[in-house]
Length: 98
Image (tube, rainbow, N blue to C red; front, side, top):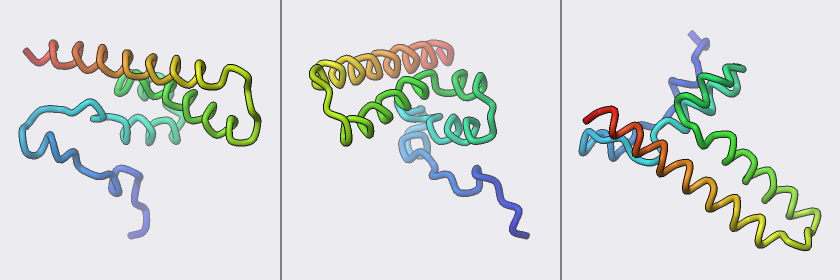
């Protein structure tokens, strides 16, 4: 009765429900759940930006406590990297459906 998995608590994608098309964030919840289960390759296959997003989040948290000299440049680089990975993986995923 209380043996629910993480999948039972995931939010549905409103974009996919309304328009039938994945959004740029589709898969991040499933990838995070797979990370918690230890399925690292499957998480990357579902959402390739998962590890770069974790790197960005880790850097942002660390930067709250430790000030780096080039912190703004590192943040901009990591954000640009994440945007690039997300857009390219989304384009490849949508190209597969065409």
